Image (cartoon, rainbow, N blue to C red; front, side):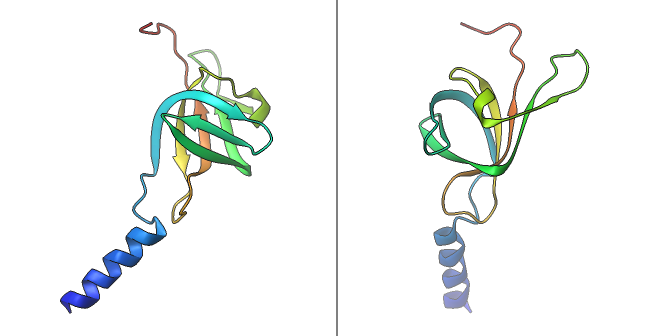
Length: 102
């Protein structure tokens, strides 16, 4: 039983099933050709089905955006696709930063 449990944990770790589901950070760079963004040193693939929203900042409702609307320096929250070995964005929310620290 112990061997079976150890094997199951190894399979879960190797498939990326325990990968964090979301995190926040600033966009360091954007690769338009490969449709990827760099956030906190991580390369994240943005797929055609990735939902991208701009936070309303207290005025109205969040608005739908596209990959071309992402900008270097945007502070975002990324929801990652589950069970993916690579970092693939399922959703991205561009956060409202009214009073940045720097």
